[in-house]
Length: 256
Image (cartoon, rainbow, N blue to C red):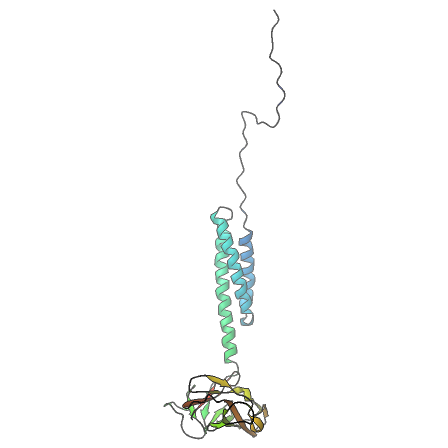
């Protein structure tokens, strides 16, 4: 009797051995956003050391904060490392705050540049109105009163209404400068404004042949001219304002 054998099975490829099964390796956590945030923060902190470049530090801090928030989102999904993400967030916040502080310091320096420690003070004429002292910053002086600003004596006369040959009616004042200091000083028509009774400050406009011009004044020199603004047509309390660049404003109170 012949013994029967089962037919041979074809070879099978790619199937694991029954005694061995592959295990999936854990995903590798990457944190490119966190690295970028840390790098931007460190560069931003360098810019924060100087007030003039503080705005760059502030901008880099905000950009770093954006990348740190993106890294935080990946960390919550388990796709980014925790330590680097928290470091990136802290550094970004510190850089943004330091940049803002550096910017503020820069603008404070610019705002105070050229300003005298002593405020404008009256040197002649009546006492300032509103019960203030002539040595008090922001006091309203009286028209006709000469006010000293670091050796430059400035006067604004009473307001008057003028009808030019062309254009609208104007309200004008004659202003004068006297350089009592030892150095040349500048004067400019565009340093002047006239505030009407409604509280609107109008910039000075051309005042015809007698208008104040712009230039420099030598020590001991004097100059005068008209400063005008469009006439609002109302009556009441006006302010004549001299607001030179980087200087404390001087205000004279006038009534029409």
